[in-house]
Picture (tube, rainbow over the protein chains, first blue to last red):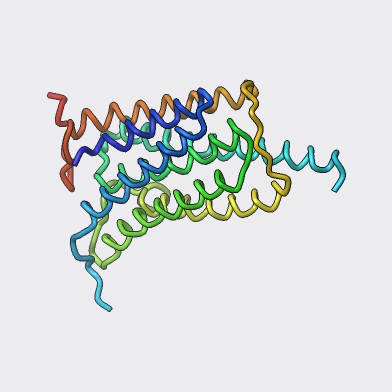
Length: 52
Length: 186
């Protein structure tokens, strides 16, 4: 799990957006969102100190 | 709606999208400045919240660069919900009594609590924008204004700086849950 990966994909996504490539920018956003979700599941599996 | 009214609302929406992007730049810059000034190392969940803000900013950037569209507003809303999920999870992690939380507080609240508020505020802001921006139209303008271009490049610079900082902190791996220093710095 590479923590820096979503920052790199997003920096690339933003550069694609600035340079006018909308479809690639949207794809980059989607890929980054998927990485974000995977990284969240990696870091959020311990139990919360709550009881219901 | 007259053409003049349509142009006015479009101009308002354009400027409010630039303001939204500026707000995201402000949040990223403040978090980064706090990290450097007080030598507070961001935890993995803190970094994920920064990623959430960048995802949100990408939606604002697309509205500014390509003209507004429901798809771009959807990008902002989904990103804000994702960021709020990460921030809410960390808030719940430290909600129990006697838990002092992670990092130092700012104006009485920890940064993850502020992040949750900011993501919720972004959703509300986006709702207002959708009401104002009734005539959403994509434009193929390759010459956004000076302020818009400045904000977009500032946004890219801040994301690149965060990438460099995260690389110094974690290297090409996962960050520890409670980092105490930068992996790549002596």
